[in-house]
Length: 240
Image (cartoon, rainbow, N blue to C red):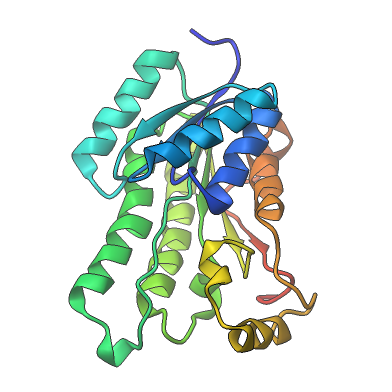
């Protein structure tokens, strides 16, 4: 059994999830890096954490799969003896205009982003801190992202309901809602689209994955013990 706290970060092989995993490890938490498809990327994150003096494990699991998640969290708890922090970060996009969106694209996004968050909470509800990654799109909506916005709005509702249900166990459940963050998802946007997006951000620029990671660490830390059911926007003021 490890004396240090143990965290699971889903979708932690790249982008925001990677930054969160590295931040938690920096703070002395043992991090289980969840990934779905790219084991090599997950191993790279693990290696970086170890090089920086932290410790981490990796675990492949499709968070949208209910049975696989049950086995995943059971294995984590049996292997490491505890689970103190869960960060439900795994998410996908399948963008397209609502009237042209396919059923499969709608379902895939809801399955990973919303059901995946439910699965994590369902099987990790003994942990002291649960942080769900939503999005400013779930607050404001976004043209061409009806499926993504719906999933992330659902994450907010799920967060608030879970916070009420789990409070009696001393478990806090909160959400972080990033705006435009510099990741692979935003790098593919055209310069015109990026400039338009920046014009909608009061601070005038995209954020960094580390900005989100710092917010997650605060909510996971002992300093946030009296905060639950809240949504912390990390969006440069977009949704104020």
